[in-house]
Length: 154
Length: 116
Image 1: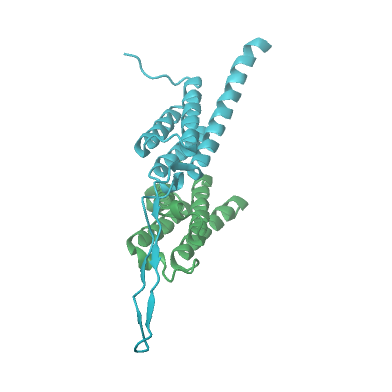
Image 2: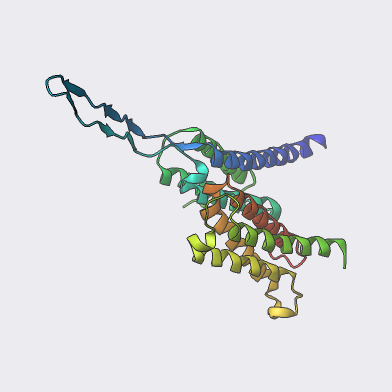
């Protein structure tokens, strides 16, 4: 009897652990970096004035001083909550929550698709946030398939 | 009034108060509030914060659409939070709106009329 019940129990536990881990990784992805910094800083410069005394007439001539402020171009690295991917991450979180509460594993498929879409729209950089999102998508898809949701075959 | 009803009432009221406070008070010394920055988004968030309270209404009111209206309000707050508050999550304003959105979501989910 034990052999007949252990299978589904183990699968259910793995399923729940996978869904929980996917949710946590999705939250983590919101805080981890998604894009690398492209900032380039050009330093400023300053030329001090020079003074030349004229000892014949007792005057002094000074040149002007020049200063140029430094500037930075490009954009700073962004974390998940600052990129457009946050819409998909939060959407996936909501779907994962509803799927868990309402026992609708099909929604996990949609959540996985949302995570993948968020990654693709942001551009592949394989930084921490994206890696977390990829793992979350893999876990969510695993959970949906282990719950018996399979894509329709032609 | 049962404990559950009191909890839901408190959550709905807290949601409205926290969102309104976050939008209207200058808590981060910016010398401006969201109402003066983008009044359309502030108005949207306030409208959604009001709408989430509809989940408290009895089934006989609004032709039984009270919970649905409340869920739309909580969903709208979640959208507002995702689009506008999440990038500013380290600010006091975002903290209050985050708490308000969480209260609204919890209140709607705890409703006995829940359809989702």
